[in-house]
Image (cartoon, rainbow, N blue to C red; front, side, top):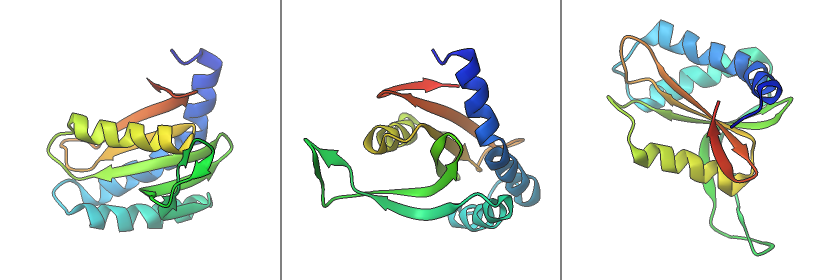
Length: 140
């Protein structure tokens, strides 16, 4: 379980990112392809002033050696708590597959936070927040 002061710190760091996500959904609504939401979200994230990387390639380590294979995340946003992963979907419902993909990104990178965003739901965007606590994935 994420400790309350840490939970507040994580939430505060993600606040402008979540605001950008809500703005995209408020403007576009559900029903569009994922790549449309990604482009709109990049526009909104750039407005926050936070350094944002689209489709960042990250080479995980295996026994101290970087692998040639890589993870490619939809977005990585640099924040005061470290890098935040954003994984975008446009589905009627998230499944374990999307959760496991997001958890794999957190474990593979060691980044502290991932946001799993589903723009395909109505009447509001589906947003799930995860914290990497030394390899243990926790909801916050």
